View 1 (cartoon, rainbow, N blue to C red):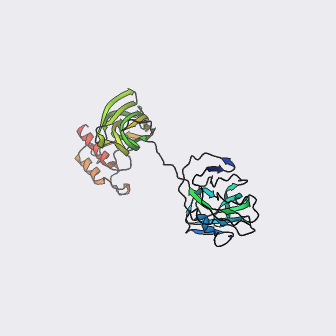
View 2: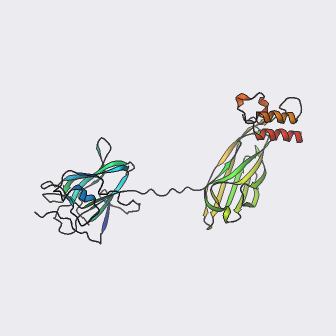
View 3: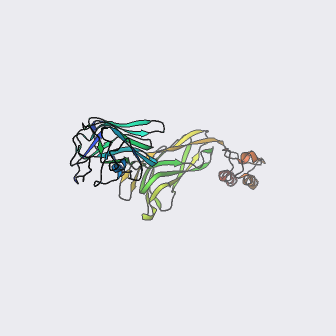
Amino acid sequence: MKRPYKLLASLSIATLLFSGSNFVLAADEYTEDLTNPNGNIKASSAWSSSFTAQKAFDNRSDTYTWATKEGVPTGWLEYEFDVPKKISKYTLRTRTQLVVPGETPKTWDFEAFDGQKWIVLDHQENITNWKNRNEFVFDNDKAYSKYRINISANNGARNYVTIEEVEMMEKIAPPVTTAPTLDIQAPQTTVAGGTEFTTYAIVKNAKDLYAEDVKVKYDTNLFEFVKAEPASTGLHIYHEKQEAPGELRFIVASNGEQYGVNGEAQLLKLTFKAKNVPGKGKIDISAGLVADSKGTEVEPTVDGEEITVTGGFDADVNGDGKYSLGDVAIAGFHHSKDKAQWTNPKADVDKNDKVEDNDLVLIVQKILNP
């Protein structure tokens, strides 16, 4: 019998790619071979000390191959990683010269050990067209430490089966590209009727943006538009128009390279006035367009905010029948306190269960404009 010597592989390798029994295109990207000769390597048997399992993972073509012991044409070859891997591609390399007819694997399972049993990840059968290095891909989203090739038939050799090299790879996840989003940000989502409040048109997931076309839609039954201002340094509003009742359009641009917009940023400060009509209404970005420094335009996703309008407010906190500095003082004392610590609930002028700057602003407005 001819001994299974391992010979130098041809430098010109034709690669076949299989998935099941079908040829597929290699559109996905994979890591380099993750195995190495120092890993925990086992085999069902070996021809001799020159044909051990380690030979199949030494990344060399000038040493002996792995071969099963004489008289055994089937067997398995196992590799264990130190850290679990999501293997979804493997390659098998065979000798290109002095190959004994039939010594190559024909039917096998590529398996993973889940801690209790071996699970078949890929099954191949009737593989007879060996081109020295064949690649096999399959879907796998679970990480395992142990993998093996479990060969149930070779291509006809009576005494053994051989594999020169085994490689195992993980699929490289494609980079996650998140589209920018235009949204409305409202520091206060509950406001008192008759009061002004501020919202912001913001962008999320921005990358190198220098111009934004923003359309805003709001509920005219509950809100009146007051004014718009740039919300960040280096931004300028070049177009502002009420295109229809409840519909606004703004075109904003950066003034200089240093003012490009990235990540999450406020574009517009939008001031509205709540009407004296209790209810809930939305202020939305209805449509938009953004462009980067190269002029590439992207249509972002859009979102908005719901605002609750409560009934009219009472700024006479101390109940003396007038608006005065004493009302401001009481609200100032309650500022930022937990509701359980309030001694005068009327300090919450806008009835949003918090005493904050807006409550004091409302009292001062009543003092100046009773």
